[in-house]
Image (tube, rainbow, N blue to C red; front, top):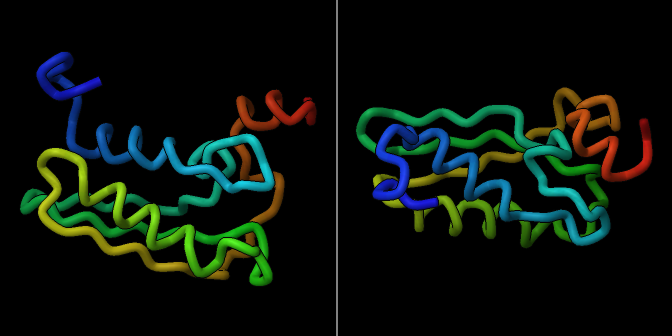
Length: 108
């Protein structure tokens, strides 16, 4: 949905919506619902900083997923700059998944 369709949607909401288009290729759930996004910091200037993790340090998309997320965020109208930082603390665990993700994966 574009800003023109929903003028009440904030830049933060548009950024999160874009993040939800990114998937871990091994799990059919977007990375936001999977609990891989720890923080989305959107400044008034349009600068966006995202802190995320991966399911494990040996994740096969460790080299490609963070740059993909950053590139997609940069395409959001109103974003001036984007940075994605990967952290391993706290480590990801299935408990970080949303209820919707657990339902999708048959874990409820």
